[in-house]
Length: 198
Image (cartoon, rainbow, N blue to C red; front, side, top):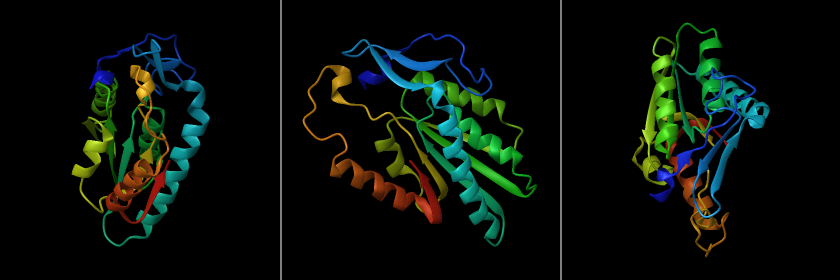
């Protein structure tokens, strides 16, 4: 995939600091038809925190009401700067439930960004949250994941458009086929009572 060959652009330090975000003030890739592809910027952090907190809170309440082990399984599509992913993992650590076990998984296409997610996973080894990184396009990874397995899906990938690589878009970017495919995957992956944050 041509997209995975684009290099991560260097950036000045970000507002949250290296412990809460990766790649500095923004995550841009060098390359493509425009010379630069903007993936994420750190000014998005209040929005990302709010979404992560809401999704985690709703999912946690559902898990608390379940009978048996308190296991919460999260799937995030798109690591980016790791702002929402780290927030979800921090929420797991701060939940205050000794019996809670959280499995966080992320799907990331770009190899440098996936490597950053794996580095964060190694830093989190001794927490209540286990971390797994799936590298590849979400359209190929999600169909291979177990059905009825996730309590929370946090969906925020870059939808790669043909214009990034100098091609003409021949279909509507928010068209029915993409929306139906996403919805069917979410429905298949979620446990009853599961939440999608998009």
